[in-house]
Length: 499
Image (cartoon, rainbow, N blue to C red):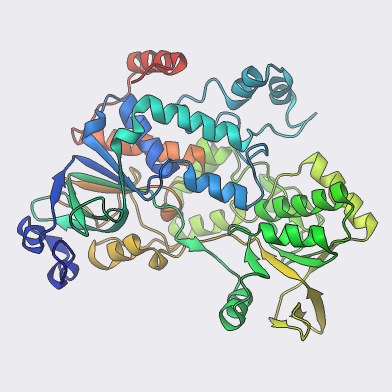
C-alpha cells in the first residue's frame, strides 16, 4: 500500500474519525467550506458567498479545471456553439451578476457600440426572436467576475475521489492532486460543509449506437454531438456524403445548422437525414395553459424552461406537487425542445425544397456496417446508408456513473428521488447526508426532480446558490444579503472593484 493513499479501512468505513487519515499517512487541511466541481455551479455559490462577505480563505473549490467556464465552453464548442454563436439563455440570466442588471443585452450593446441588442429585447418575441447572448460574452463576463472575487485563490486542483462523514460533525473530502503537486497520492480537506456541483457524469448514447460502438469501435463514424467531431464536417467538405442526425433538441438544431451552413457556404453535396423518434406536427400540450408551439418534427420553446419555472405559477405548482406529479410536469415542460429562430426556419425550408434535408420519423432497430465501410441504419422494413451518425440526445445523468455521487449513495446516507437524482430539501441540502452541525449541499443536474424545476440552468444555479447561502447563514456561516449590502455590492460590481 502506497503511503498517503486510501486504505481498505478508509474505503469501507462510512464515518471517519480524525485518526483514520492520520494512520494512512494522508495529510489533512482544514477549511470551513468545500465546493466540489469547479464549474459554473461552484462559481455561482462562491460568488454569492463572497458578495455576502465570506472571506476567500474560508472556502476552497476542488476541480480538475483551470477556470469555472472551461467545461461549459468545451461543450458549447463541441455542440457547434462557438464564441460568436448565441446560447439558449435569457438576457437577465447572468452567472456573473446575481442582480441580473444590467442584462447581457445592455452589455453587448455597450461592447459592440450598437443599439441592436436593446431594440431586439424591446420588441421580442413579436417582431424578433428572443434575445440570447453570444457564448463568448458569457465566458468573458464570468472571467471578469472570477478575478473580482479572487476565484483562483480558492482553487485547489485535483480529482475528488469521495466525501465521507466525520465523527463529531463535518466531512472529509479526498482529493487526488496532479502528479508531483503533493508529496502523497491523496490529500484530505476537513470541512464543516460541502457543496457538490459536479455536472453530468459523461456522454449519453442511444442504446443501438452504444452497442455499435462497443462491437465495432465506430467512434470515428458514430459520434456524440458533445464529443470532438470536427472530422465529420471536414470529411464532408472534401467529398460528398450522407450524415444521419438523431435527436430533436437544441443540440440537434445547432448541428443541423452547422451542416446546412457548410452546404450553402461551400456548395457541398451533403445529404442530411434527420431521424425523429417523435415527430411533432403542431402545437401540443394537455390544456390551454400548458401548450407549446411545434411543427416539422420539432417542439419549440424559447428557453430550456418556460419563464414561469423560475419565478411564476409553474415554479409554485412544481414546489407543491407530489413526487409523481413532479415527474409528469418535468416530462411535459422540460422535454426535448429548441427555439424557433427565423433564420434557421428559412434555412430548413431551403434544404427541404432543395432535396438535401430529409426529416423522417423512425424508431431505429439496429446499426450495422456495410461491406464498403459505411453505416446501415435499420428501422422497420427500411434502411438508410450513411457515412456518419451524429447522436444529439444529450449527456449521461445516471449518478452511478459518477464516482463521488455513487460513493455518496453507498456510504454517505444520500438517497435518490423519483427522477433518479439526489433527494434534497428546499435549501438544497442532500437528505440523509447531514453530519452533526455540518451540511452537504448539491446543485445542478444532480438534483433534478426535487422541489425546483429549472436546476440545470444559469438562473437555476443562482437560485440554488442563494438558498444554500441562506441556509449557511442560519448555521452561522456568512450572513444574509440585506438591501443596504446588496446596493453597496452592486455598486462595487458595476465599478469592477474587488469584493
